[in-house]
Image (cartoon, rainbow, N blue to C red):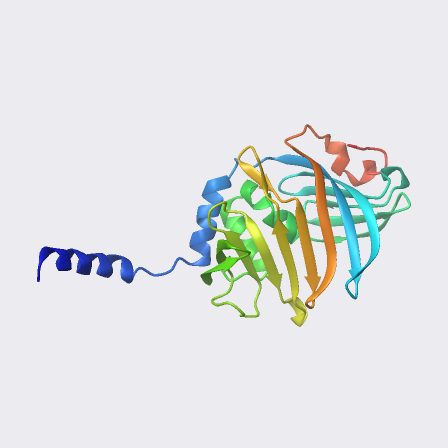
Length: 243
C-alpha cells in the first residue's frame, strides 16, 4: 500500500463513518449562534390575506409588536377599534370591540421559533421543542427551494411528523410542518433580511391540509425599538399603541 492509499483510507475511516448530527446537536449550534444576540424587541406592519379554495376572500392590515421571549401583540385592522390578540407569559387574550372575549393558556410556538428560544435557558428550549412535538433525536439533510437545509424532527423526507427545515448557511427557519390531530399544516418562510445579528422573513405562506390558507407580508420592520411594558398589559391593551 502506498502512502496516498493509506492517507485516503484514514480519511474514509475518520469521515466516512461520522454519524449524522441529531436534531438536538443542530439546535445546540443554532442556540449558540443567536443566544442573547438576536434582536430583543420588534415592530412591523403586516398585510394578511386569507384564502378559500385558492381564492382570496379577505385582506387586512395588522400591526404587530413583541418583546422576546414571551410578549407579543397584534392589532387587527385599525388599532382604535380595539380588535386584537395579546400573548403574554404563556397566556393569550383575545380582544373584540375593546373587550376581552377569551383568555386561555397558550405558549405560542411560532413566537418561540422565530426568536423567543434565543432568550430562554437551554433546558427550557429543549422542553418546549418536546412540548411542541419535535423529536430532537431525528434529523436529515435535504434541499428546499434551492437551499441546503437541515430538517429537525424527522428522519427522512415524507415522514409525517412535526418537523422544522433550517437553512444550513443562514441558520434561519425556512419551513415548518406539523401533523397535530392528523391534520397537515405547513408554513413557508421567505425573503429573510438581516437585522443586527438576527433575521426576519418578509413573507410567510400557510397551508392547511395541503390547501392555501393564509399569506402574510411584513413591512416597516424595526429591530430593538423601545417599547412600553403597557403595550403587553391586558389592562392597558386598549389605551396603548405603538403605531
